[in-house]
Length: 354
Image (cartoon, rainbow, N blue to C red):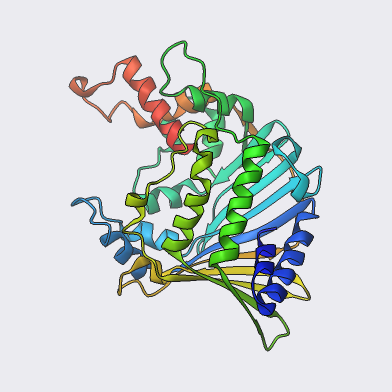
């Protein structure tokens, strides 16, 4: 629908927009879609980008983290009972996501039915993110399920119970969890129409062929102008937005770069196979040489339940991590936690993980 905005422009805009529109319509008709998200960058560029944010001494991005993100890929699959374009939240029956890098899979989780299934290489993650991983020998005997986590095996958690516990963290005792922000259908439609009008005015579409028979359609727009125009369109809807969704002001945007950003859409036999967005210019930093985002489409794969997953409950996760992080030799008597402090520490760990 957004690609159809190009119909308001030149003949080339109309042709490019129609092709994109048809490609996205085909995607919307699928009940299962899969894609790979890739941050196209390198360690030096990420470190330079971090330095330009003027971090406090000691808060600079570690080399291990920059290396982790520069080589990371995220594979996602979403499955619905209905065509994706017609689906609401209750129609989705399966989702899977896998994060990997050159060393292999780091984290994978699947949401199927009533459970969330997870497995990860916690040692690699801990080393890359700079936090210690508890040893299996530090866990109490009753934390057998948590040992499976540390050993990289599949575990499963009741999804509703996990969401409930996460929502309750930090809330006042006895307080009801705040409802998730939602948009009513009328407001969603008006937001999409505002975006459509903005794209039609500000985005320039062009087409180009390729040697392998695929076709490239580029969409280019000045970043600050595009964002400012869109926000101007939706400011009348501000009162209809959920609490917490505050719109930035024109003053907030005045320092945003207004360089042109280009999205490159690759079509093969009319099907969308990849989208690439070059973000180097937005960095406004000569040391950032490589910074882009690509989304590669693949044949939809049905998420399946992992065999032999061990079921965990929230109490086991809290108690197991707490015991592992508070071994007998970890603290002196003067530094020991009270029970309440330990619980708060456990909750913080779980909230970070969620």
